[in-house]
Image (tube, rainbow over all chains, first blue to last red; front, side, top):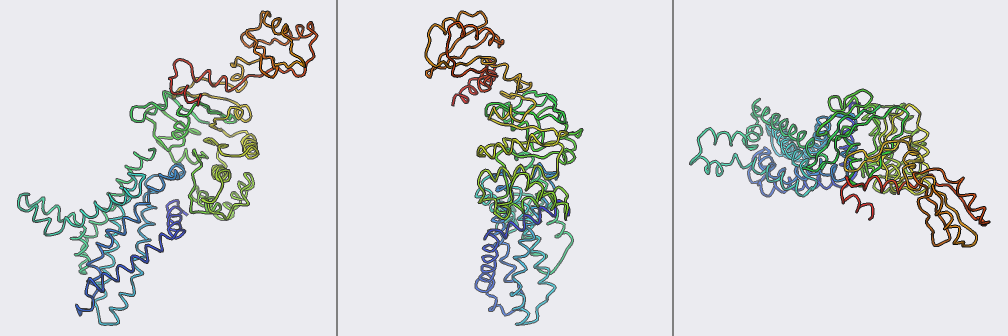
Length: 244
Length: 318
């Protein structure tokens, strides 16, 4: 087994060694139900799709993903195991990728467990399952983006709470930069390319495009590049700060 | 083989390691001594590739730690300070994890685990979670993981810290019995440990080497080297006066319990001068021994010399 796989397995196992994973999954599923059926008016809309669910998922992730990401590195630094890990013959990059993938798979698992929603909507009507699949793919990619940001910020501090809050704030900004209200603030004075730049950077712009069922390569590339960039930043931050 | 040349590490303006150069050959067990903050752990962290030095070069078994860290790290077994381990894993899972990351699998991995578990006696806690282990078992787990790949270079940061006297003895035996082609660095606060396990001692203070030699040479630097300690059955003032008159005697200390310590000039052997005096006074001896040297005395002497700052002196007093 490659070192990346070994570390990935250890990380995944550690989620389930404590109640953290179960609590996360239960809260995620409960909230996604509440959002979809009550706030999203799933039944009132009378449409066989999961738009109600996917509209809320960025907000759900905004709170829940940082809570997974905050322990990625803070915990290793606090307990000193980072020294054990980083003196094994593995590179910082390999460890960063392994930890990220473990967390991403974990969130992917939580996302898959919302399948009763999909069953419900298929039972009630005839939805376009391609669009739903795209929605799930978009959600997972977006979770990856949040996680990559969280990985980098978690590496910057020993304190999990600080890591959580920083990640939440940065992710919040990444979401709202695509909102019309935020755009209006800029559009009155900023040049058009800057406003466009902000909109392009927003998670929401790309997520909405994918979850409507339009899988454009550019949206996929956006998330992949975003994840890669934040993970690279994580490597730099860890190499810089691991001794503190 | 470990080669360190001109190594420096500066943290926010504080110089933890200052142009350190030394090399350790296979078969040597180097004891790192020094007050807290002398740069022992920092040096070890740089050798193992955890920290990048501000300046200088380190090579381990011919691999440059800076340019090819993975090759160097394959050769190194490392016990970090405080023996960190993943709290949520069992002892067996921890060892498996380290072994797998190091590229072992199947029966070979199992064999290696069995072998180190036997060496450090971890059997009783194999299925316990790390967070429930006592400090002694934690340390032994740390030592076990560092030995798992039978490394050529072994770096142990305070391996006996937190162990009870029996466990300390056991770990020292373990280090002594490592095969003779290994290069070992051990850091410790316990000076007797140096004479017990090391073939070479190095004292660091403020990031510089202030002593480098065999434990015997270290002991020889003590004022008490070759000092003669005697205890008489009944107090005899004139003996002390006679001893003070001897030309080779620098000082005679008398203790509350009737103990008399005769300290020689420049660590010379003075038993031949002392014994005629004792005979002439027809004293009845209860005890007589020649001291090798008091290590803590040397330690204080070399680490609190004028070029070493006030702070380290205070630390030792405390």
